[in-house]
Figure 1 (cartoon, rainbow, N blue to C red):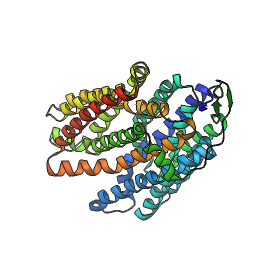
Figure 2 (figure 1 turned 90 degrees about the horizontal axis):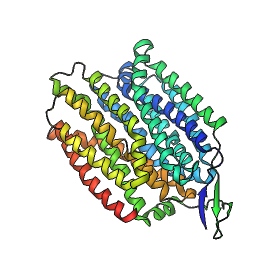
Figure 3 (figure 1 turned 45 degrees about the vertical axis):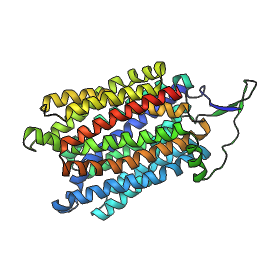
Figure 4 (figure 1 turned 135 degrees about the vertical axis):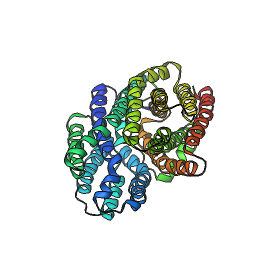
Length: 410
């Protein structure tokens, strides 16, 4: 007997509503994140200490979210994915408002820790998307979801900068809290919890048995027994390392190329946004390729393409050519996450999917912690350009490894 998702209740309607909610959360997240150092200055932190405190308020969220993700994923499988998305959404909304009320860096650190604890909307939302459609539509549904996420990441920094420049930093948190609350209410009233059915040996559907209660240790052991899932977790970790290695140093690299840091933040933000916009336009093309040729092949193509472009970016090509190359890398790298998520979906039983996506979130959160540390070490001792060249070579290597996986599992 196997377990399948019910694709008749909610279906693509669920996908679009969840994607809209996730887009709002992504906008709010990226409205806040780039400006936390400015907020620290407003709170009275000496300029010499801002870098340290920025690292702390970033890192504590990733750490706690990474620890909690498997726990929330487990609860989602047992109690319901929609319930877990609502818990996370309402929790994050409250946290954003509270952060807008803090009076010093210690309270901000506590608020960011609470955000990490409340986190979990993304894996719950992705699990619901994967369960709302049948397997033939999973790639398309996850592609739509990923496109919404990318658009949110593109819009957020511009919107956050505009609000901050007009009314200051604190209202950005209040606006974000209210927006997340509205998005969560949309999920509450308009999204139906995807149902699971069991398929017997006679091919007929029947209600699925309740999810078996297991410990976290048993969940990790179950994943270890499936090498393909272990490798997918490794790729999730690696790709998040790559993203977080490159984003924090981009402004510094732009400053090096133009010989001054004046305007580097605006230029680097524009370059990132253009790359993200290009990615939002090509996501579904990669998803369709994955549906036809296999998701591991698509992952390998995206990795190798991104690796080649990063090697070119490590050369002194000038800002304009660097921007053109960023469009190319945005178009390539964007196909990796939806392909990874589709591969996880196809290799995971629906009854275990919440826990599995919780583990992928943990891998990503830890990647977010490791990536900046590695980038800072490389850029400090050998130069910023070497971060791009080393990352490019690693992506080429991982691309070839993913190609091998496609021969084994597709």
